[in-house]
Length: 67
Image (tube, rainbow, N blue to C red; front, side, top):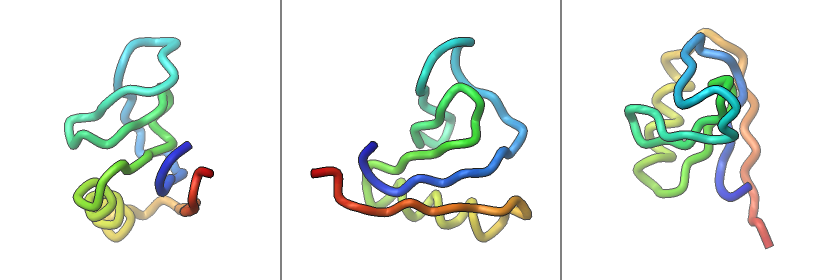
């Protein structure tokens, strides 16, 4: 996957059942269970960090190049 990833379940489920990834209201890419978020731009990354700061859920960040 490209970009940072955030693990943790915020209780929200977006997209159709069985879909691997979908866009949430904040334009961050989430998987169908809502527990993995991928940011694909600087603005999306800022939104991920904002969610991490306001969340009480443990978070894992995977940040690295995809080459």
